[in-house]
Image (cartoon, rainbow, N blue to C red; front, side):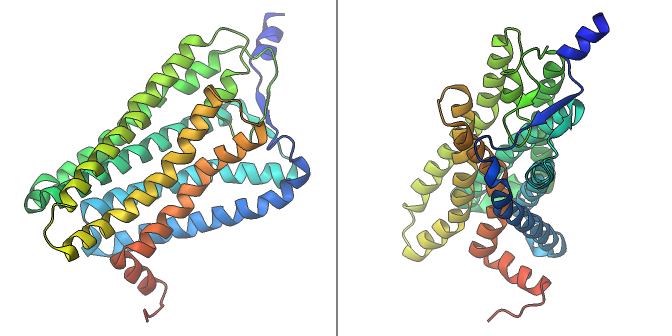
Length: 313
């Protein structure tokens, strides 16, 4: 009897519904989703190949960018294949351990992405506000330590999430109204008080993405202050152009991320709208990051064309 009760409260599988209310359109929705996934794989794969093979790009900004591209690849591959299986084959079951692994990878890697973006903002701050000491401050050893620190922070702070979720009893249902497993989606299915767990999740979110965002904004305020203090119009334009791609990428990442996070906890958004935004949060940045950097960074653009065998006009 106790074994049966444990199985009921701790199911071996969860059921992912996809996008409730839009089931009839799942096949059509899968077309842009699949296209975004392919573009993400190609774009980030090309970006990694360009940075790896071009020694002139072995600088702090591009090294952080390569780590961002790798995180993007893993996030896309963690979510999209299962989502497409739901849309195409109605393969909605996901093993509990696979679900918990998906939660850990999504949340820890997006936390790492936020950290890498902060590192890139710091790199731009040093390059523009203290250019003569840039190479002395951001040495290869310092860059490696920053990268390791970002990875450890994401793994340690988000590591407890799957273990906490595994202990929860799910007596209401094991059906998740989503295209992938998400921390709050499982918390809402539990039939015990999860106030402490929700508070921990909020604290982690503030200490990672929230704090990173504040520091990124502060960095760019200082950068813009320094840029507009430059006497040369050409120097101002060059500095702003260099920062433009970073600002675009950060807007693409933080806007859907904060919308998804806040609407899940405090908002009253239609379920299908929330799920679509939540998917944009894990799909859109991986697709846009290589496009933005490829278009706005001449060194990456030229090398990418060379790798593809295209002669620049």
